[in-house]
Image (tube, rainbow over all chains, first blue to last red):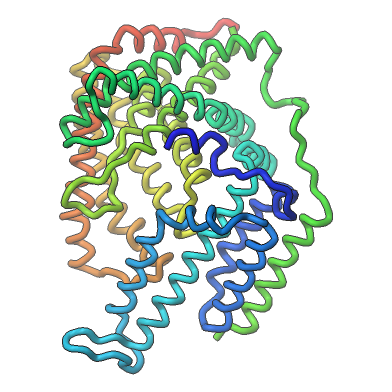
Length: 265
Length: 197
């Protein structure tokens, strides 16, 4: 479980979506979430599905990874679907069997919500599958830059994000190592009842905290030696470059929104 | 030494990473609904709050949720669950900090954690009634639970869950606190002393 988190969920590749600027992708997902809520009938939800399918094709991501991303929410999707199926009581009855009554509106709402869910999860998955967490952080820093006016410490937040991201794999490794060391001594923290779990967590936490504070101290010294002095006038190793394709990508979203508004009830 | 602020930022970032890792080790409680999961990710935030101040604690809680959102995404699109988690952490951390600041001992931390548990359980019950559950209902297009049904969900689901979660975190935190007191004091003094740089 721990190894697979190392690069977040990023899968290297060379597709149109991979090459897009992280800022464009972030803005796209942000506005897409709003656009999805425009859909309210068969045609509009159909258009959303087709649109999502096209994006999947463009990203050249194997379906396996996307299905993997859907797994954690499948339960929630089915649950919502059933809830709508049994409890939305509008329109003609389409199935009447003993005590179960299914109404047309319930079935329709259930399907619509399932589509909305699936589309949203797939789109956000594609964002994180085609963009490294570090470029997402950079993109967030640039996009939120205007908020500096209201004293929001954008640079500091982004710095903390980058440091956290950098040290997650290291800490995961360490957690893994400590867990194995404890397991070798007969403790087990993944199973057992509440009390056993609680007893197992303390010997895991103490070494983690001790080394985290030590690492923080080391990193502070290292940054000082390299002359870190905050965000002002800082130059960048990784640069984000906005290209024509990014503008065009955002424009397709406008087109999608217009089409959806036209076809909605 | 770097300016105190930057050192604090780095320590907060490290604690956020731990918090995020702990979040992955979440487990559901028996009987209660499965979407309510207990994890110990509030502990790094508590440590940050008592060593470096309330802002550090809240930052850890914030970053842990941003990280989790980046890695796991959110089924509703709008991260309602993450927002709820963030608010829960604030409600839990603040009383602990306020009381511990006055009484710097294991008694102080115990009283603080008790107060934190209560404020979290009550605060989240109220907020779930008025804000988060209606928000979920809106985004999932649920037929909204109303009146007594919603009230029951909260009294038999949210309230006991937050109490149990608070008690579990409290127990772990007290054990941890007693063993780590010397280190915590050292960290506190190194971050709190007026910086001459």
